[in-house]
Length: 78
Image 1 (cartoon, rainbow, N blue to C red):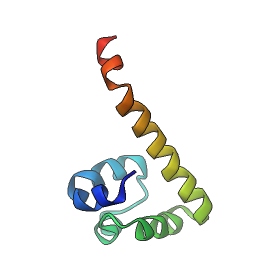
Image 2 (image 1 turned 135 degrees about the vertical axis):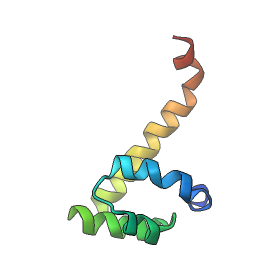
Image 3 (image 1 turned 180 degrees about the horizontal axis):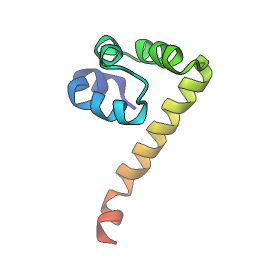
Image 4 (image 1 turned 180 degrees about the vertical axis):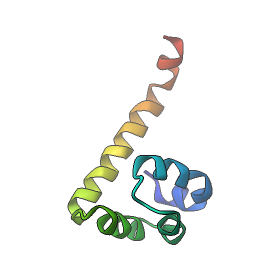
């Protein structure tokens, strides 16, 4: 996940974040405002997870998005 892009497009991006992590409230998402440090902190509080776990979840999300993006043409042809 490119955090500069997330920060710049936070209004559009936060809907996807809410779908992925439903425990994050509208207030959490407003305060995060696309900032990585705030995002991991709010996830830790909302889910009771460690920083390592939240970072791993973000890496997994990034890998899935990169995989889907790189295979988008192939998926549409099927």
